[in-house]
Image (tube, rainbow, N blue to C red; front, side):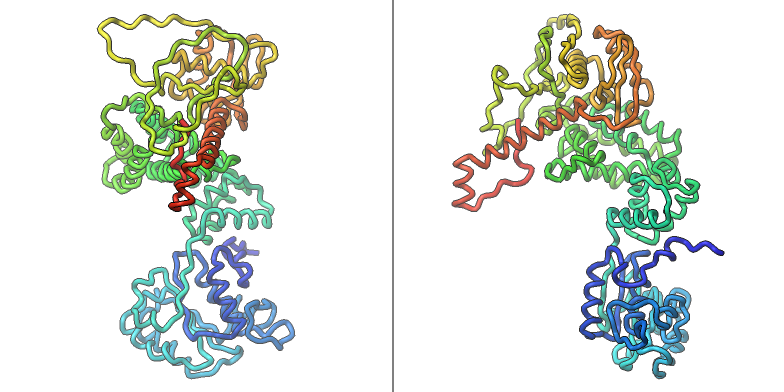
Length: 587
């Protein structure tokens, strides 16, 4: 028995099974129920969104006789009567499909219209379906105009096209036009889950997310890619094989590129691009993934309420949104978006990718140090590291005053006083030296910093609290940077033995390379001569997560305080004032 591909096996047989085209289903269903039927329909949309499927379901609805043979026009064809079964099998004599891509001349159209003078043989209506109608010649369009305008009562025209701009307006004016929309990735992913569950094929949600994105709005493409993924994965649809099959860049590489750009680290950008070359990833795929991440980051910067706390991708986007100011993020988005067109012009696409990414450093704002963009803006967005209140520890090294931009009127930071350390039990969040302004130049050489002993954990301190204290001490010493710093922030201590510590990290990319060795060396210099082991698993209660949660709490408190301000309430009541979403920032 021959194998039937998923795109044909799971083709919808009625309107209830249609996915992602509710506006078309609702209009046709109401028309069929009230029997307000037009004589010509035009379905437009990209490939694989259901134009031919809707045409066949409409033909079945017009000719269905029901299981008992006494039914009439219906919005819910039975699928078991002779008309329904023969239309599904492609042998219903009163349903004719014409492929205009290969039958585009006036002779083919005239031969089709000659059948219009004969009444239906089996069904209630004759249905002429012309696919890719925009491919017809001008003479062919002219030959069908009169019949299309005033067909016999038993004749219905159904036209389908992927390019309605090429259809003459004289034809458009004679048809009811329905635009079938590209399907969002979430809708495609949900349908793929149902299909694979019915097929009893093991799958991972991450793999389906990649397939849904790769389909670009086409359900047929999604099912075809799923067929290929099942074959590639030997009966399983898992994320790693699907990513390899699609040539999709691993998210960790894109995160490294954005982190390097945010830090002004040109060497890090070049090194990551070289890794993409060695692993065979497409440069266009890297830019495409970066554009998607930057778009999501910009949304989270403008509307923090859009954050999905349980989505790991949103967590990464929220963290990175604090590393880039909004203006530089928009610049980088534009460079990546337009840079895709440059890849084909260069003799080496990876060299072109390097130039596109390094272009941001060429347009760096004056007065901003290229080593880091983590200014007061990142502190306001919740990227500062959480400093835990712990057992008595040596006094920290004094930090220079952080640069704070002038606050606009009615900003939450102008009215919310900072909590006093003497009465607060909450962790205190301090900007790291990377967030501070440069000290004024002096003719005398700066004194060499004196190393401070590492803080010692008290016996009642939990492992996450202890790890946060250690990480904060490393950051104050500037002992970790770049990828090593991110490994420390994105990990949590799960086991602590005399000579071995085990860190749990959620991203495998952070465990690659020599980041572990550099973090182990930094710990040894801080007084912890231990061996580090890494385990890849979902990490909870990391220092970065604590910082993000505290920043979100401060922002919510600022919103609440601002809403209670009498002047703000008076402005809203008397003048209809509104607080723009995303305009309030807690300093």
